[in-house]
Amino acid sequence: MNTIHMCDTYGQYLNMKEEIDAAMQEVIKSTHFIKSGKVLEFEEELSEYVNSNVICCGNGTDALQIAFMALGLKPGAEVITTPFTFIATAEVLALLDLKPVFVDVSSDTFNLDVTKVKQAITEKTKVVLPVHLYGQCTNLEPLLNIVEEYNLFLVEDAAQALGTEYIFKEGMQKSAGTIGHVGCTSFFPSKNLGAFGDGGAVFTGDEKLAEIIRSIANHGMKQKYQYERIGVNSRLDSIQAAVLAVKLKYFDRHIKARQFAAAWYDEHFKNIEGIKIPERVSYSTHSFHQYTIQISRRNELQQFLKDNGIPSMVYYPKPIHLQNAYNYLGYKKGDFPVSEKLSETVLSLPMHTELTEEQLAYITKTIKGFFQNKTGNLR
Ligand SMILES: *Cc1c(COP(=O)(O)O)cnc(C)c1O
Image (tube, rainbow, N blue to C red; front, top):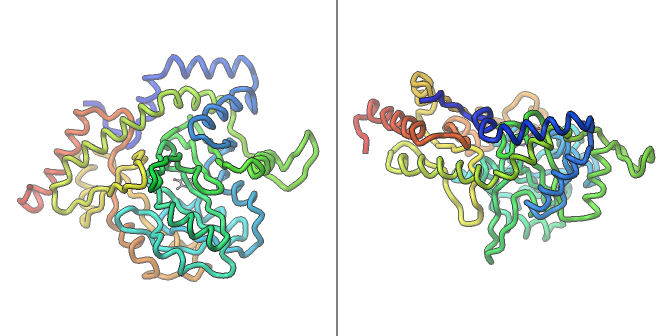
């Protein structure tokens, strides 16, 4: 059996090697490394895929920063978001002098508990920023009602959820990241659609906002050497765009491979007392950026897996409100008990497009063995 990886970027590449190599060579020959046709072509293809305007940029963190710059918020404006996410979500707010206001997550979905959002709204609240953690959407319809009622923006951090569909009560579906006013995603190599380096994109259905976002990502430029606002330099480069364009062709197949692995895990874990498998909700598909179980003897299982050659990861071991850099926000331990508990109980298992049945069988057998050894009570 081949080595089991947390994420098998190289194995995936080998299955598309000829096409990817040719696409990269084409860029090198053209010498159009920045903003060549490749980037614009990929933007158009992705735009068709998600059915929204797409503005590519340097990475997912930049995508968030550019999105927030485009909203024209005043310093001190409050943004309601989750403390159980990657640091970038809160970091860009701090950088822009906006104030992250945390609301705890739901223990079933790991996402913002939408029933607690209203009570966090103040005069200064301007944005609600849900994060579609691990690849399943936050419950957005209630949030859409709230942002409309209070005249707020809804910005989606869809860095982990490209390829996920939000399902409205009436049956209509929209791509994650295209439901709010703005959405952001990342092409970090291990993300659902991963480049061979950094990359990101901003989505918006609002043409005017799209124009502003495009300008901000390009130094605030309107026409050549005419600057109408202060911007940043954040671009996807052409080689990354070429790689992403090839991978986009196989993207649906890749999401299905993730879902296959997740279904395998589900099937083998559902009867193990002590493992809580990831909840599925009616309002979203799941692209399984991560397959994340909850287990009280987390660290013990992680060590056991390691001893048996199986990698696993903890996303995330410390919620943001307890990180030193964010002490200034004034939160303390106990403020968000669900996030704090999850940080001690979540474990993400190997999840990628190249997992074989042999590997999946080995992983699930090993985990069953852990429970058998420890409790003598395998069911
Ligand atoms: C990966 C990620 C980001 C940032 O993306 P980068 O491309 O690494 O800058 C932001 N938010 C979440 C939830 C992420 O997982």
